Image 1 (spheres, rainbow, N blue to C red):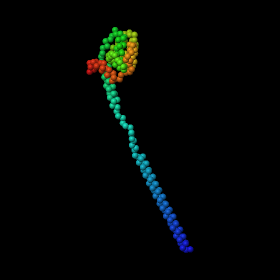
Image 2: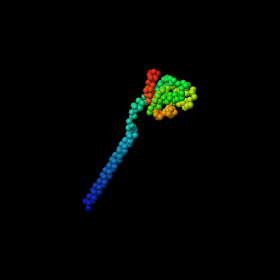
Image 3: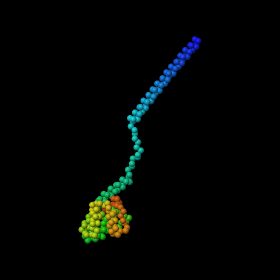
Image 4: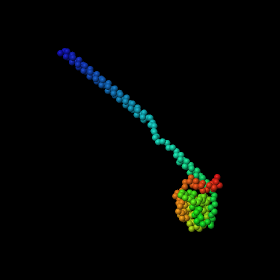
Length: 212
């Protein structure tokens, strides 16, 4: 009976010691996990702070636009033509050889041929310089005569005298219809470079004599 008691006591002691050791190990394990979790959380917080403080570099995938060389050259060509046209229009003198005895039909022909300088048409026959000097001559002669179409003529010449050529293709076609035209109807207005090209073709002698 004594041996049994001793063994029982030893067993209880061993079991108690084992349980205590187990609890200690468990507490240490949990403490380790808590410390590990705390360190991990601290690292996450540091990373979030770094991401917040570090400026984000924006990437622009769009390629810079290259200058349109052809368009720039075209603009320069038109600008140069406008300068030449201004000189031609204001400086050139040309005698239409008209006066109070000039017929209405002759006036219509002159207006028709002057309009050719600025209009688009499949075919053009005849050219008279459209400049301040010739417009002024027309306006003076028409104003002093009692032509059947005087008001119509003055309307056209009056717009030209003001430097307004927005409707010169319509003016051409109205005169062209009065004359019974069948070929060469205007369908638009030349740009400055095209107009200067026409002038160079038709009035090269005037350019050489008066603008060089």
